[in-house]
Image (cartoon, rainbow, N blue to C red):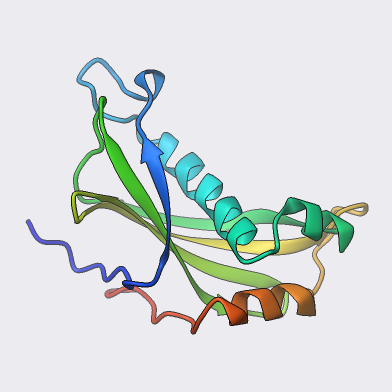
Length: 150
């Protein structure tokens, strides 16, 4: 069944190798791992635009997921490989909305959207998205349109 999820050609992509312990007895990746994959890919994306944890922490900033939406269209399997596509779609006052897709052989097997809030590292309270992060994301390219049906 075709999936109506557009992954931009220039989306950041993180390679993924499915590990043995992530799969169940049917060799299908357990559903809970996908959010881990997406969060790891978000951190790799931030590194790629020059705003990794070292820079975030130097700015006194950290990130927390406050909302996730996830849809499965097929399954990743072990052994297997995929790419995790990362595409920021919006930066608000205190949050950043990011779309993800697990792509295997050109097929989107899982799509998701996370909303991350920026927090003060010391106080663990919500703060405005720093200008340095806005600039780093902006220099990575234009924001994407939301996924179809969202």
